[in-house]
Every structure is written in structure tokens, then in C-alpha cells.
Image 1 (cartoon, protein in one colour):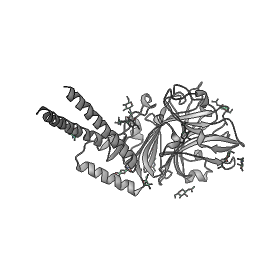
Image 2 (cartoon, rainbow, N blue to C red; image 1 turned 135 degrees about the vertical axis):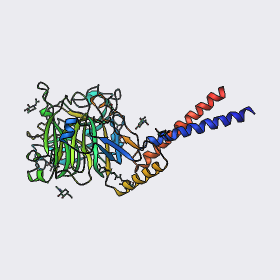
Image 3 (spheres, helix red, strand yellow; image 1 turned 180 degrees about the horizontal axis):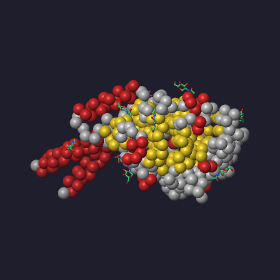
Image 4 (cartoon, rainbow, N blue to C red; image 1 turned 90 degrees about the horizontal axis):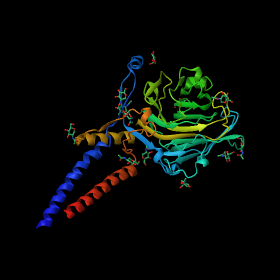
Amino acid sequence: MAPPRGLGQLLGILGLMLLALVPHLVAADCECGFIAHSPLTQKQAQEHPGPDQLLFTSMLESRFYDVQNISRDGTWKRQQYNVSARAGRGEYGKTFATKNVYSVPQTGAVKDPSQLGAGYSDSTNGGIALVVSSALTNDSVPTAELDSARSDMTFGTYRAGIKLTPVNGTCAAFFWYFNDTQEIDMEFLSREFDVAKQVFPVNLVIQSEASMQAGYDASKTGTFKVVNLAFDPTLDFHEYRFDFLQDRVRFYADSRLLAEMNGTSVPTSPGHLILQHWSNGNPLWSGGPPEEDATMTVGYVKAYFNSSDAKVQSSWDSGCQKALSKGSNDTVCEIPNVTAANSSTGGTFFNTSDPNDTEKNNAVRLGSTWATTASALLLMLVLTCL
Ligand SMILES: *[C@@H]1O[C@H](CO)[C@@H](O)[C@H](O)[C@H]1NC(C)=O
Ligand SMILES: *[C@@H]1O[C@H](CO)[C@@H](O)[C@H](O)[C@H]1NC(C)=O
Ligand SMILES: *[C@@H]1O[C@H](CO)[C@@H](O)[C@H](O)[C@H]1NC(C)=O
Ligand SMILES: *[C@@H]1O[C@H](CO)[C@@H](O)[C@H](O)[C@H]1NC(C)=O
Ligand SMILES: *[C@@H]1O[C@H](CO)[C@@H](O)[C@H](O)[C@H]1NC(C)=O
Ligand SMILES: *[C@@H]1O[C@H](CO)[C@@H](O)[C@H](O)[C@H]1NC(C)=O
Ligand SMILES: *[C@@H]1O[C@H](CO)[C@@H](O)[C@H](O)[C@H]1NC(C)=O
Ligand SMILES: *[C@@H]1O[C@H](CO)[C@@H](O)[C@H](O)[C@H]1NC(C)=O
Ligand SMILES: *[C@@H]1O[C@H](CO)[C@@H](O)[C@H](O)[C@H]1NC(C)=O
Ligand SMILES: *[C@@H]1O[C@H](CO)[C@@H](O)[C@H](O)[C@H]1NC(C)=O
Ligand SMILES: *[C@@H]1O[C@H](CO)[C@@H](O)[C@H](O)[C@H]1NC(C)=O
Ligand SMILES: *[C@@H]1O[C@H](CO)[C@@H](O)[C@H](O)[C@H]1NC(C)=O
């Protein structure tokens, strides 16, 4: 008589456990999207009026410090192409090669750090290294680029944890791109970094029709600003962020507003994200080429955005409706602000998979199922012993 009762109890407990698990899984799914805030001071909010809360329906989160081998990644694609000196308006050409983009897993995983470029230090938390080499081939500088595979990104908040190179003569860029006249850029020129004077500028640019007419010199337009960072960007990871909205773009570092740009230069098409590290010897921009190998390390990317893809939109809509009709809580996830304290890891990730990414969705669900099975087995063992 005793065993069946035990089994009944066990099944009851198991059922409760499963029930307890459901809201947790649902809560983590953010079915109705993500809320971003504009972390402005009161004074800034007066100068830049606009909505404080923004809703985005899709996301792309990559913890590069957890990635073992970027060459097998489907979310990001390493680039391979050449740009001649003339086409790049530089003294040298650029050779973008996949081998200049590689994974540096978290501490301990690097067997021979001397193989990595200068600027790499053992204290790094890992990430994707983008290397500009000092060893020119055919009058061309070996350079690095990593692009998001999806290109359906419209309005959104785009964020990357990056540690820059102290080696003089490169341009490191985190940008959103549709074409040469619809582009939002955060560019760092290492030749401008001056430790003695504590000067660490970031160049904020929107490339537009106006900048094309000015020969792609955005400094002749209203959408070019050089802002000094409040920290040395080569010592640690910091979060660089731009919010691309319908009528304006806001740039941030560690959740502090650097600049806002508005007007007709703001892009209107869907685009993709690019991480790039290059040099072509142009003394007016990248400078260089660098005298030693220079490494830019990207720890993570987080992007919360609206998709231009009708299928993605309708899948968001039905997923959200379904969650709401089930009475789920927390269908909207609030994106926390990253500060200097957590910019090396990026803090919170939602672990929600892209609704379009069924493979990943299944993996998340399967993982949870296994966890449930394992705890049930453990419980069974404990009960049996009792
Ligand atoms: C982010 O910062 C802004 C402004 O400081 C604040 O209003 C907002 O609540 C913060 N968001 C979170 C999730 O902490
Ligand atoms: C993103 O799309 C959702 C759903 O269509 C919409 O409610 C929201 O306002 C959009 N966000 C922005 C910033 O345009
Ligand atoms: C990464 O994967 C590619 C393709 O599978 C392989 O050729 C390469 O050796 C791997 N690199 C490392 C560092 O494991
Ligand atoms: C790019 O340039 C490199 C170095 O000169 C060369 O080895 C390679 O074949 C070129 N690739 C393409 C696609 O032209
Ligand atoms: C060297 O560069 C020139 C001009 O960019 C190109 O035409 C030529 O194919 C390159 N040679 C090699 C070996 O890559
Ligand atoms: C970029 O795309 C827009 C919209 O399609 C177009 O009007 C513009 O001419 C394009 N710019 C370039 C440089 O091709
Ligand atoms: C970087 O190198 C250029 C060219 O040699 C030089 O003009 C510039 O002052 C250097 N920058 C720093 C911060 O030393
Ligand atoms: C852009 O912002 C400035 C101040 O931030 C404001 O004076 C101007 O009216 C805005 N322009 C547009 C087109 O919204
Ligand atoms: C939803 O939130 C309310 C109020 O916080 C709480 O009472 C309720 O138990 C929650 N429901 C679920 C399914 O988590
Ligand atoms: C980063 O740390 C701050 C301060 O501890 C915290 O408020 C914030 O939520 C954290 N951000 C993330 C993304 O976890
Ligand atoms: C989120 O996913 C990562 C792997 O991408 C995993 O290491 C981590 O434990 C997951 N976190 C949660 C809370 O599920
Ligand atoms: C969604 O998945 C379909 C089928 O795999 C693919 O064709 C489409 O490009 C994907 N859309 C996005 C935005 O990733």
C-alpha cells in the first residue's frame, strides 16, 4: 500500500513543480517586447524632449565572451573583401580577412597570448578580437569586420561592450548600415587618444545625402559631433549605444548621453550592424598604419529593435496575443541601463530567443525540460531514501 501513495505524492509534487516552472519560462520570453528608457538627466530631458519609454519587439543578444568559435556562428558573419587605396580614399588599400576576426574566450582559454595582437591583455574578459595588422601585404593593410546576418533592423536601441586599442593609427567602428547615405556611426580614432591630456574622443556620425554632397565629409554637415569620453576606453570594456528612432538618434556611453541628432538625415530604411577595425594611412582619419598589431575586443552586443520583416512582425503579434490571453505576467521586459560597473559583461540578458529562430527556441525549451527531469529524478531519489 505504501509505494502507490508515495508515487501519488511524488506525482503531485512533480505537477506543482511543473506548474511553478511555467510562469518562469513564460516570464523569460518577453513575448510582447522590450522597453528601453532614455537615461537622460533632468536638464537633458528638457533640452531633448521626447518619449521616455520605447517599445521594441525583436532582439539580438550575443555574449561574445561565451562564444568558442565565431567562425561557426550563424548570427554574425566575418567579412572578406578588398578595398583599393583609391576607392578607400587612403594611402593604402584594406584587406578585410576572416582570420583577423577570432574568438578570445574568457580568461584561461588562451594558450599562447603572444599569438594575439598588441593591446590584448590577460585581464580581458574575452570576446571577439578584431585585429589590424602592421604587416602590410601588397600595399594593403590587413583589417577586420564582423556583420550581423540579419538586415531587418529598423528603429532600435543598439549596444556593444567594447575595449579599444591604445595602438596609434586605427579606426574602430560600431555602426548601423543600410547604404552610404543611411548610416549611423560611432567611430574611435586611436591617434586621437592622448593619455597625458586625458583626451579620448568618439566621433559620432550620421552619413546622409548631405554628407555625400559634401564628399562624404560629415563634418561639413550637422550630423557630425566629436565628444570626449569621461574614461580611457583602452583600459576596459564600456558600453557604446545608439538609439535609432523615427525622428532622432541618441548616442550614449555607459548609459550617459553623448549627443542627439535629428532632422532629415535620420535613416528611413532597415539595415544591419557592423563591427569594424581598419586603417588605410589617411592622416586625416584613421592615421597609421599601426606600427604593431592593434586589437579591438567586443565583449557583447545587445540590440532591441523593430523588424522590417512582415513575418517577424506577425509572429511577434501572435506570440504576444497568446501570452496575454494566457494571463501571463511580465510579457514586456524592461532593459536595464548598463553602467561602467557592468559594461564588461553587459549585465542582464533576457535569453529569449528570436521568435524566428526555431532551432534556438527548441534548445532553450529542451534545456528547461532536462532541468525539470533532473530535479524530478533527484526528488525521487530523496523520497526513496526517506
Ligand atoms: C535607466 O535610467 C533612466 C534615467 O536615469 C531611468 O528613468 C530608468 O528607470 C532606468 N532604467 C532602469 C531599467 O533602471
Ligand atoms: C515598434 O513596434 C511596435 C509594434 O508595432 C510599436 O508599438 C512601437 O511603437 C514601435 N517602436 C518604435 C520606437 O517605433
Ligand atoms: C573554428 O572552426 C573552424 C571551422 O569549423 C575551424 O576551421 C577552426 O580551426 C576553428 N578554430 C578554432 C580556434 O577552434
Ligand atoms: C585581397 O588582397 C589579398 C592581398 O593582396 C589577396 O591575397 C586576395 O586574393 C585578395 N582577395 C580578393 C577577393 O581580391
Ligand atoms: C595587389 O593590389 C592590386 C590593386 O589593389 C590588385 O589589382 C592586385 O590583384 C593585387 N595583387 C595581389 C597578389 O593580391
Ligand atoms: C540609399 O538608399 C536610399 C533609399 O533607397 C536612396 O534614396 C539613396 O540614393 C541610396 N544612397 C546611395 C548612396 O546609394
Ligand atoms: C599618432 O601618430 C600621429 C602620426 O605620427 C601623431 O601625429 C599623433 O600625435 C599620434 N597620436 C598620439 C596620441 O600620440
Ligand atoms: C532638433 O533638435 C534641436 C535641439 O535639440 C531643436 O531645436 C530642433 O528643432 C530639432 N529639429 C527637428 C527637425 O526636430
Ligand atoms: C501576476 O502578478 C500578480 C501581481 O503581482 C500576482 O498576484 C500573480 O500571482 C501573478 N501571476 C502569475 C501567473 O505569475
Ligand atoms: C548594471 O549595474 C547597475 C548598478 O548596479 C544596475 O542598476 C543595472 O541594472 C545593471 N545593468 C544590467 C544591464 O544588468
Ligand atoms: C542564457 O544562455 C547562456 C548561453 O547562451 C547560458 O550560459 C546561461 O546560463 C543562460 N541563462 C539563463 C538564465 O538561462
Ligand atoms: C526568418 O526565417 C526565414 C526562414 O528561415 C528566413 O527566410 C528569414 O530571412 C528570417 N528572417 C529574419 C528576419 O531573420
